[in-house]
Image (cartoon, rainbow, N blue to C red; front, side, top):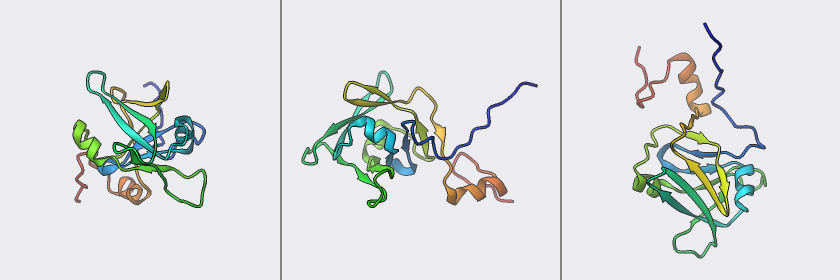
Length: 145
């Protein structure tokens, strides 16, 4: 039998850019991804349906198509940045039943998330005990013993 990679499913390496689409569509960018984007006050969501690409484009806070980017913990300069994206994920038909994380790519001023690549499943600390003691049904239903 061959080796299998242990998937930690937890926090990414802080120096590697990461974009997480949380349950119900909230976007979370770690400090490295936010810095790569230029630390904008807001972003526009762009969608390439043919290539299955999401792009985050920096914009100003007064842009009518912009979504504010805010630190999860205002007092910490390196805390993750969250962006409300539920309407966008519904618009593109993305299943957000479970949080998933991608390593984005920078193209010009855009931060690109390639949905053709399988995102890493993110298990919150709240759900970690359920996974280890009860098992996690990825359809969204918890096992009932």
